[in-house]
Length: 474
Image 1 (cartoon, helix red, strand yellow):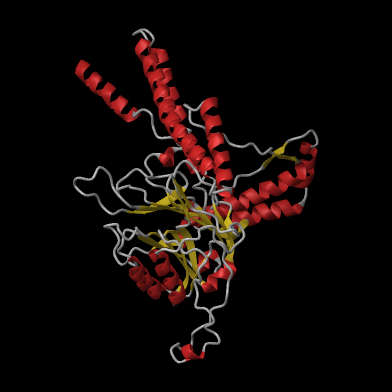
Image 2 (cartoon, rainbow, N blue to C red):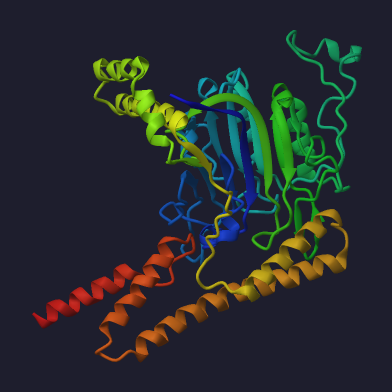
């Protein structure tokens, strides 16, 4: 069985300021492409419709107060189906709705130790949902520190500026030697940059946690974020409150860390961490890798095939396949189909021409989008890139917010307009135009099946309506 070598695993976190129907927007879904995606502040309940194709998901919610209009908080993690067997949801590590722990199995991912991931949202100090967050987090870390390495990523609501996240000069401080345990490893100086020059009280707690638990911030230290980019933009200003924090022992495995460009979906930027690993994935297991070629029959193919069939080795391969007793399980069936495929592939290689496909970018845009909307979206994306480079440019920031607001309004208007146009078409049809009526409905179903966009019409409700009408006639 052929395998594909995977040399890194990607983990993202993003405070989305309410998920709503964003997970049905094609532009939003372009950002949910990593192996493991933590979404924070989703404002979703446990029974919400949150599924995304090709991903498994787990969720946590705070619950909803009786008088509240919506849920608050909430964490959802989306895990690619291809790696789900190597990921375990650690439900019992934290009882808080502000943290979700996962375990990445070292055997599955080819790591030297198990890796514990945490998607985190720490509320502001004045929030009613704040409850000794750093003390509880430190307690959870202490339970896992001896079992493997740790990566915590998300919104900490903490501002740390360029202050040290380690104990300074502890390797040559005689005053500390009698206080430290025998197995204590000295910290070493690691330069870190930050465009945010503010330190707040929660920032001090985060720095103390890093020093105590020997964790390190990735922001401002790795390729992809050398400058320490701003992670949160709003009308009041900008700051760095979103971080990825790792065990010291994991630093050598961090390949890349990036703060994504500002987007209209949230005032927070998405964080992405690339971690070196070493595991293989079978082509049958990997659903996102498609064959990039086929075999073309030519005028010479017939003679070449006849010549190959005169050789004894092809019959030996077929004979071995026929005598091999494959198990009557899914794994046995996979082995059998792979074996016969290899026989046909070897013959095809020798008798036909390999025809490589051109790379065609898949366009899966929603049916209601038009050039006006797409141009506005491009404008917002370009401004987001500029704002990342010039985060303190007030005029640029105000323009970005202005066009983001226009984009949200256009999204609602275009969808509503599209829906109204279809309803008008249906309304104007005469009773004799039943064929045209059903063609319109089929068109709606086809477009919504091929799109990740949220449904414009509930076709199940429509079918129920016609069944009711049929029963009334009977």
